[in-house]
Amino acid sequence: MQDTRPLNENPMKKLSYSILLIFISLPSFSQTIINAEGLIDGKDSTILALSFSYSGTRGNSTTDQLSISPTMIFIANKNEYKILGGYGVLTQSGSKILNNGFVHLRHNYRFTSRLQSFEFYQVQFNDVLLLDKREVFGGGLRYALLNKDSLSYSINMGLMREHEVLNTLRLEPGEVYETRYFRGTFISSLKVIINKSLRLDNVTYYQPYLQDFSDYRLLNELTITSSINDHLKILATLSTRYDSKPPSALRGLDNIVSLGINVKI
Image (cartoon, rainbow, N blue to C red; front, top):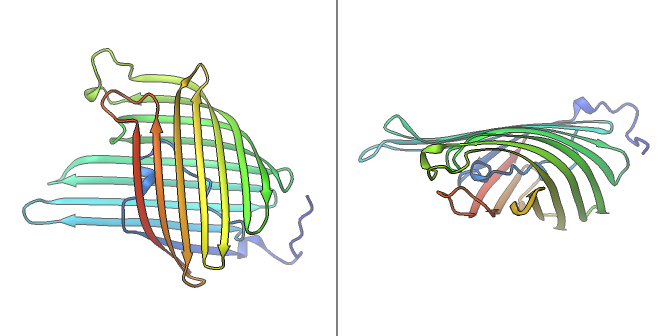
């Protein structure tokens, strides 16, 4: 596909900074699957973003809750690079109650306007999901079935290698705490621009264990974005996570709602 940008346009000069103020904890910290699909609209060559929230109490109890998520996205010709991460901690009287973090690296290469490859690496820990460590890497192909300005729909199909180590303190005696699996990775991504001020994004992840398709994970994130002006957006996200075979101490289903403001400078 021919690059149609003007010859005198330097992609490194197009820099966008975003500050995301979250009113409710970031959904990523309670997810096994990290959603990296909805982080860019393709208009900027470089994006730097930071999500941050803090809450604390003093008096009958002393608690501190902090979450931070930096993101960097860079587009150069046919390549797209994403680096995103997050860390969240909840302490009471100086002792950690919850502790979660992740790093996700991703690369896309555009063959045509509809076909791309993707490769990724992710490592995380999550006290909520009993994860001492989860490390995955993989890749595949992404194809855009619809590619219009107001409506786009794409599917990703690939393979990933997963290594998980669970915290044994809350597991049943003899329960498996370490696995090394090959899983499929299938992603459905829908974007609908209803008008100049309202946008809808829905991303669905499906990750089955290739030797037992009754063992799978699902994540669906529906985000509604309302643009107040060129610099201010309000976001509402509903996330649903399902694990068909969770550890014995956990439920398989989680629903999370998050609200936030995006300030673009």
